Length: 228
Length: 398
Ligand SMILES: Nc1ncnc2c1ncn2[C@@H]1O[C@H](COP(=O)(O)OP(=O)(O)OP(=O)(O)O)[C@@H](O)[C@H]1O
Ligand SMILES: [Mg+2]
Image (cartoon, rainbow over all chains, first blue to last red; front, top):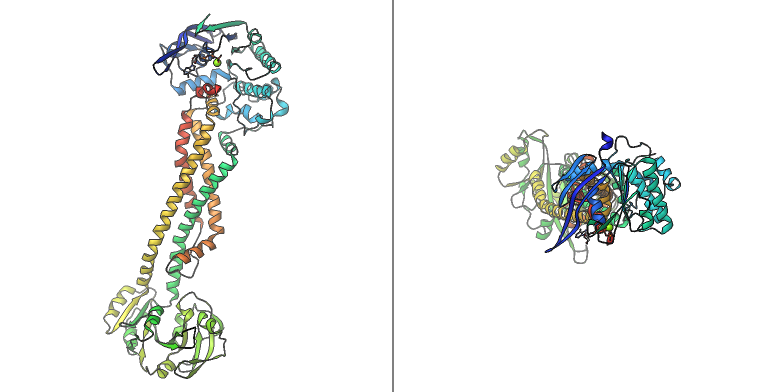
């Protein structure tokens, strides 16, 4: 029964931005069902609404209208969303986020950056020891370093480790390789694939790179805020 | 491996812009210094003044009506304004039951044409060796000691009186005009009071040589510890031809003079605190703005508004407490300098330590500084707590 509940279920999501009198429909009525353990990539031209959509799905933003269920729990219905605190509770239980930029704290060591989520929240069932994750990402030799001393690929791996310590059900990645060269990009792509295949993690990946997108089992192309 | 707490994140963040953090701490430190010195001054000055007044030896001074009792007035009037009362007044005073002991005094002023460029007034204070030294037991001798014969031609010099003429015990000195030779038998240490400039001589001798037998210019009265000084003063007013100078009144007069200065220093402290607060708010707010993205990411990782609020508040409080510690260290280390500064500013300063920094004062200073931190951290912390996770990601393109 629980296994049947989809990880995410969006119906007729719309997001409208107002810039003065001008209205920009960034996401224009998207309905989407994401099963548990799926790996979906989102592609499409710049401005097609990929980031907006993934932010709505990840509860980082409220849609203008539509409804959204996360793991069976109603987050949004008829455009009316939950409070910020309630959204935070869902976010920290369900999602891990990786962005194009790494947003590491420069004053903290690499290890401290990785365990920082625990300063705010420790999910029951999350591994007490972050070392397996750190080893999986090949970061164990650099734990005392600070972000400024790392390469871009290493920094992105730190950001991924940070997203993973609370054992999220869904990993959201918005152009995670956008700032990396192709070799490091490939590495990150492999990491997502392994997480999906070995750990059964649901992965939603926004990318411009067709080789990255090819790693997913399903690819959704967006055009002007709609699924093409 | 070790855990990471919210407070550690806050503390480490202050290292990000070291110079800025240090400058802010210095700003708070300076205002805490002003505050601690002010509070220390309030305590120290009152205590020192009380000690000085107690050191007068007597609580009530009786002078002849119209008689100037301050050395300064005496000098201005050139000693001509002296008025006298009869020695018999002592018997009247001793009848009062509040009186512990009484000492008669005769002041004589003589113009000395050889002193300084254009001459100066020498003040001779005739005292009774049987009662005066007992009342002024705090006076310490640098050389020699008190005379015992009330009629001998001897003198005890105050510190400055001796210094001025480079006198030693055993030296002979002449009273100008009178052709009387006095032998110096004692020299006092510096007391910081009028006594420093005084030449003490036996009262009988002074009365005789100046033709003032049976006359006094002042009587010092030591009141019983437990007695009601005010009641005694009221009855002394009834004595004919005398003027009652109450040391309690003198103290009040000085205190009210100094109160003005205290208010001034207090406003400086308040201004310093306000400036420090603005500095703290500015520093923390800037660091919040710089970290919008980081804070947004923290919120996407599950930080609640109250977590972020607490983190930023902690940063503010750390800055303020460090500043408080610095301020107290400054107040301690520079107490002597501050002391000198205040002595230059105030019309009258007692001799003891003017600035008293003790544990309650340190606690108070820290409490105020903590208050500054709590108040000035509130707005930046609130701003940070309101950051929405998406703001960080949206500004990606910038
Ligand atoms: N905060 C905002 N205010 C106004 N318009 C916005 C805002 N965020 C996005 N948009 C607009 O919404 C549309 C979709 O933007 P979105 O960032 O989702 O595109 P994208 O597919 O992620 O593009 P890219 O590949 O360049 O990242 C764009 O036209 C964009 O200008
Ligand atoms: Mg985008």
